[in-house]
Length: 337
Ligand code: AVJ
Image 1 (cartoon, rainbow, N blue to C red):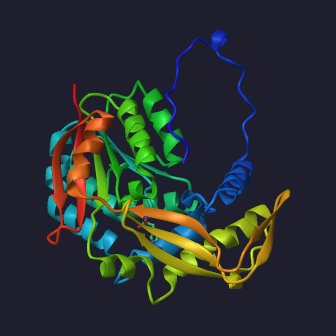
Image 2 (cartoon, protein in one colour):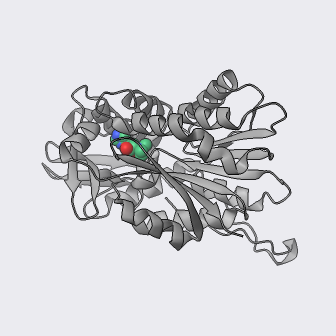
């Protein structure tokens, strides 16, 4: 995840000549090679979400052990009206960062929709399949909402949002599912600051944070007996074979989920079951037997951390909504005037 960049408005004559844009394939290969050169080797988790990966994640959200989606839906079912209360009655754009299938967003949009409500739904996702699904689901469930899908990374979407000065609609940015947990804390602070800079006084954000909880619950969420999380993890290798012409032997890696009590975070790994070489673009990467590639961190938070994230980025906390067991929090923040 690259940090979001501030968009500048220098006159065209003073702007530097545009750098030749690398293709997304070149970015993918460069990110993969950089990650595999680290110790321990790692791969950026945002590459999980090609069409197949997005579908696998959607299946994961229906697993009995993957509580995150279910408890956040419970929170939004109970509190969507309160969440949208500061925005009701004004033209509003709901920006959905990492929209996935958009099911939870429907609860927010329904609470905002009504006769005469000027409501725009702007899902942001790198997967065209996920965007199409989100727009289809929302159009069917919430009549009268205009869909404006944005196929982009979070950083690019925030740059566009910052540049979107002519639009007077209030913004509600949804950053749900504890997607923020995939970032190290410093990166998360960078994304939240970028989000703050892209917004105007009166805009709101709703950020989902998965909280620290008993370890057996966490393990059940990230290592399911059905093997879907394993398939999700291995799809990253399959995607590199498909898109980068790599030759990962999918049968020679196993999915491992570990708990890091320091961060704290669940971590996902692909463990090489034998010594092997992989050919990737110009390079040969060697892996020892038992060597692990880190593919994801999913940070877990304590309630005390949430206020610090808001304050650091320059947001004012409006409210926190939790589920009955206190497993998950959706935090509503406002851009203070
Ligand atoms: C979509 C990033 C919130 O970290 O819990 C699910 C992805 N990884 N199972 C998470 C995921 C393994 C998920 N997020």
